Amino acid sequence: MNIQQLRYVAEVVRQAFNVSDAAGVLHTSQPGVSRQISLLEEELGVDVFVRRGKRLVGLTEPGREIVAIAERVLGELGNLKQVGEEFSHEQQGRLSIATTHTQARYALPQVVLKFRERYPQVRLELHQGNPNQVAEAVLSGAADIAIATESLADKPELVTLPCYQWNRSLVVPPDHPLLKKRQPVSLSDIAAWPLVTYDSAFTGRGQINKAFAERGLQPNVVLTALDADIIKTYVRLGLGVGIVASMAFDAATDTDLRAISCEHLFQSSTTRIAVKRHAWLRGYVFAFIELFAPHLSRHAVELAMQGGGCDPGL
Image 1 (cartoon, rainbow, N blue to C red):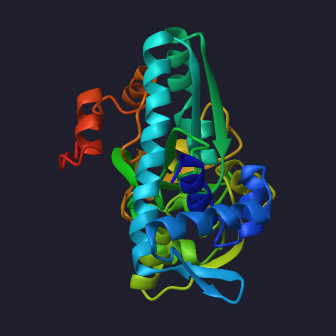
Image 2: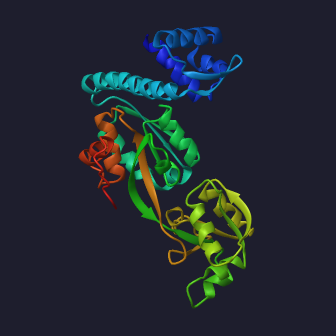
Image 3: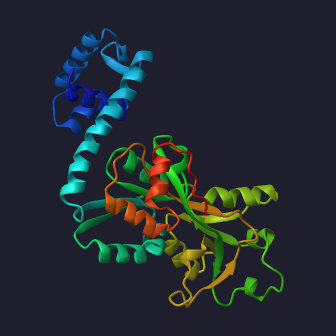
């Protein structure tokens, strides 16, 4: 048994049991991967994979246990490397953050500036995607930290911690009739207008859908978009009214739009930060997390990663 065999088994699972795809990721040949998996199974005396002809289609019962152990072993090997780097180059390295457009555009800039002042020799990488892509980036090892509102808490392989709560605002042109209402805007008021808002995978869209459904209303969604800047662009063009995260409206720059608070209409959402369970995090990773969410001290994060049941709250 060797580490290479464990890597092959783990990568085949990641590639949905496609040996050819796994070989491509590992920069080796398909027969080489198949041969090493067969040698491992012979040594262990059990089949790791369920086969249909020559194809791998799933994991056997012992295979599930073997893959879980292999993932832990490979994770700990990665941790060994990180420990060496931590103590030999404490102020240098790379920090990769996977996040959504809204977080990257509106929540992170000041945090990044402060981090750069403290760790000028750490190279920062920002990768944007939808919440599922953000979670997968950390699970695959492509990113150290994930920041998003949806999906993170649904991944048991991740340790997720709450950062802050937020709600939504309606954005409209400056002469829009809804601005003249004396009473707070209602869901019925919004449903009377064409609506531009987030794609269903983004930024609490589920909370919006739920609120309308509970009132028996069907909003006229004419356009969905991946980020608030696009939503505001189409509101400016007169396509409809927009619902965005309140943080995405800036009165100083969005001078041709007006915001109407919708906090009384929608349940608040929680932005979370996530790291891979049992990962070894370098000191500056903890520093970044605390800059982003001051209540998440290194002690609080480490306790949560150790399964200490810590929920720092908001």
